[in-house]
Image (cartoon, rainbow, N blue to C red; front, top):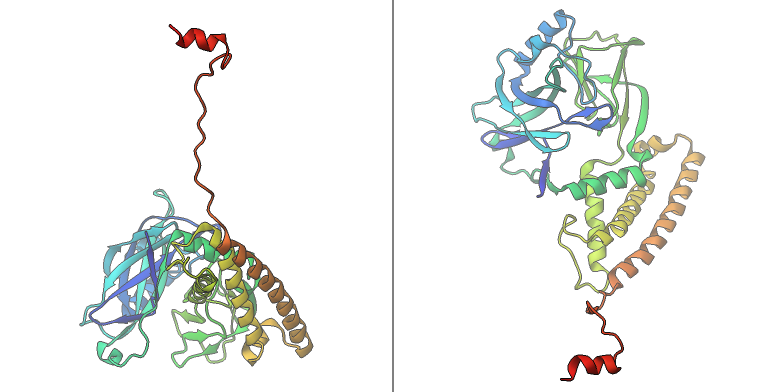
Length: 371
């Protein structure tokens, strides 16, 4: 059965928004015990954060930071809910929330309260989504991103990330200085699509800050209280060069290229329905597309800076990517031809007699059938 994955960043008054949460325990997707969701606005969120901070317990956590847990903060003050989450697949849960037209526009928070086991203390994951007025989206030029992802396609995404472009999807950034916003609480960093399998670390004036903040895993850190202008805020995180939507586009392009390969009468309309033998060429072409993007990115300063600072080193890496691209392309051309030209085995029937008569045309044969 297909699964729906959509962006959570934008919510419109009078419509539903699907809020996802990914639960990771010890580096693996893991199902929690009875996750519940509370919806609250910025005011109530700050009040609950301040009260939990006074009790020496952080009310914020990231996808992989489960050290902050407190039974007192399991139900935020003044929040809507609880809403009971629905399991989509292992470690991925969601809740469909109706954005009432009376809800104020701006930043809202979905607070996921859960336990790993029935006997463990409750923990929290906190995320945000932006509520917009429907009027502002009348002339919106792009619809919300919705992709159909099955277990098979999710497995292909993992294969693409882990076997072809692993390093590009796990790029470390060591203690990058953030630039503050006007509210003195929000700090922005250079890259989005942070890797949720790694814990984000924050330093203030060279001293690690264990709590009192949370990350949206898209390039932003928010503190519960205001910082001084003189404070030096740094973050250590991992980010992905390609987002999940881009990886899905690469795989879909690989499927289209296989459909266009003769005989073109043999085609599939979706990745989920594609034949098992097509997975290897689809993955290869997706990896080829990713390498093209990496090489193309070297033409732009910010993307080139990700891979190397020195010009000579950048050129060396471009040459390596081109060599790898040539090898993948040659392998893909060979595999796609064989996969699309394979023939079905002939239909035949083999009959084995249950008993074998002795002698054939001997006297025994005559004795059996002669009266």
